[in-house]
Length: 219
Image 1 (cartoon, rainbow, N blue to C red):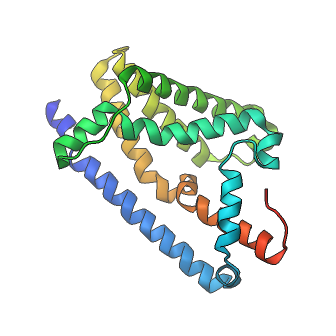
Image 2: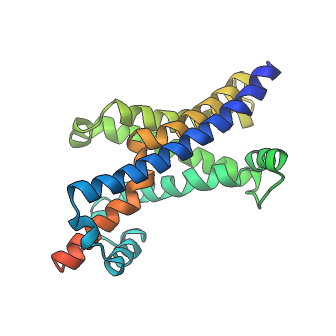
Image 3: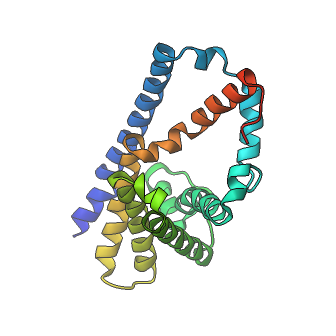
């Protein structure tokens, strides 16, 4: 069993990182080349002034009309997207692994705080699943990739919480946590999770069109 643990926290983890990095670079370069080929006006009218101004508005909760019309979704979305980065990066166990592999480390969250934040992510996933199932207009545009994406995040954090509290078979929860986390890392460039890569670009595209072409606000 230790051999399997060493494999999924060693070679398989590095393969996951490499696929994520190479896939992300490929997708970003591909998107740039497609923009040049199909719609060069995207680049001609790109306006950093309008891009930065738009992002400043959209990055503040309830600062746009869209955010204000869906207050609960806005709160859950902001909390989820912040914690899905903060918890894995500043988790003590993860930092210890990087220190072991690369000799680098950084400040970590107190374990009790990280535990609560991970539970919050699980609850956010539950909300997203409920919304996709219970809201007809959202269910209509929901495909298998959406279910798989939120399911993978849910399994990653839920199994991590269960393993931390040693609820259920510890080793199975630990392996499930590691494998689901690696699966999510690999799927980012190739599924709808790619909005983590394209999000700023799409916001910049819309902001430039509204600001530099239509001369109106996009928030």
